[in-house]
Amino acid sequence: MRAKNFVPTLALLALGGCSSTDIAQFAGGQPAMGPQHWMVGTVDGYGLVTDRFGTVKSQFHAHEVGSWDAASQTVTVVERITYLQGSPDAPTDRTWKFVQTAPGHWTGTAADVIGTAIGEERGNAWHLTFQQKLPVNGSEVEVSVDDWRWRESDTVAIDHSTITKLGITLATAENAFVKSD
Image (cartoon, rainbow, N blue to C red):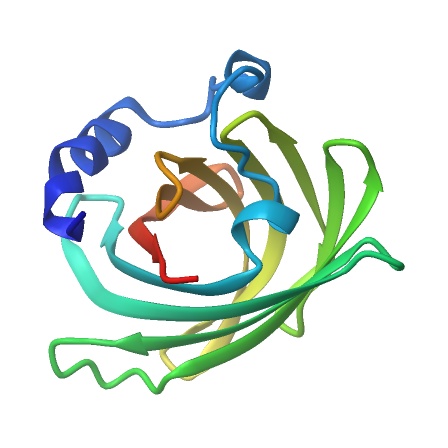
């Protein structure tokens, strides 16, 4: 399936928001979304960031390659984000380490994450919250990220992130992810 087929879904997610979403409602969803299922292998994401007024600020491509270590219950995801449309933003590289702490529960770390990210999976849904150092105009701003990802098929997932500071929404990011292996 092509990413353009998901534009209506992305629009609905953006309009509906995710602040009142309860992950328990996705418990029976298939296929499974957990990091050890979805994030292992190669995944490409195509998305955009809008500011709090709905203005598109950037478009990007995210390339992720993940591996699973069953002994340590750890998923490692190497991610490269490249901004499109002549953006002056340099590509961003990040390596995530997600550790399963209990069935359905994860912690995550990355260089630009402050402290530890908290993740939870149920059925075809993944919810991750964390604090991040976000580069803005040559400096770093500490923000909160509320990230949701829903697996729609064996090869497609939809992602919606809300970025806030002091409870005020600064931006949202919408992504359509396609898994190639």
